[in-house]
View 1 (cartoon, rainbow, N blue to C red):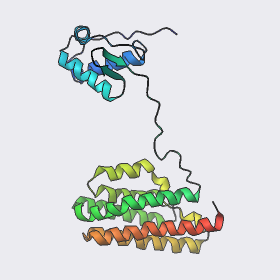
View 2: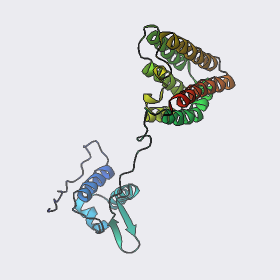
View 3: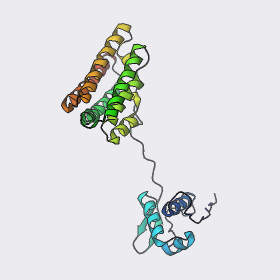
Length: 246
């Protein structure tokens, strides 16, 4: 397989990207195409400055960006060398078997550690608009339950609304990463209509306690209500685990 040389295009100030970004992207393309193979040395700073028709500062910042991405490594007195490609990292939460009850219990334990704090922060930090979003999410969840429709996604949206009310985007990031599949499914506990109605009523009361505490600005009560909610889900799954052995 022959190397494909990437033609150098002079950076343009009208491209929408900074000069550093343009030089970085072109160097990255040259590395990824094999023009600069792992172990090879990049041209000197002076040559890159001439090749791209930019200042030494632009070249240095572009190379620093590539270094941060793990593509190159400066070596004292020798120059900048291309590194071997990093092995792809396995993303977290990609190997969860949501059919297995034990996996759901593991995720509920993790959610408890995160969402109890989220509820407390939401009680302290939420805005009036976020209060409204939480109430709308609770109302939408109740409408789904009343109509006999699946509630998992609506349930997840309520938890996302609470995460948003922390005004720390990392809480939403965490929940979005693990996804709506972690919401307990009442169908696992019992298939009878009576049991389903009882389950949904209990879950609604738990959600009501969480939301009320947040809207009241009661940090401790919000944490406690969320803890009881998620601990209750853990308990229901543990009881099911004893019955099925999954």
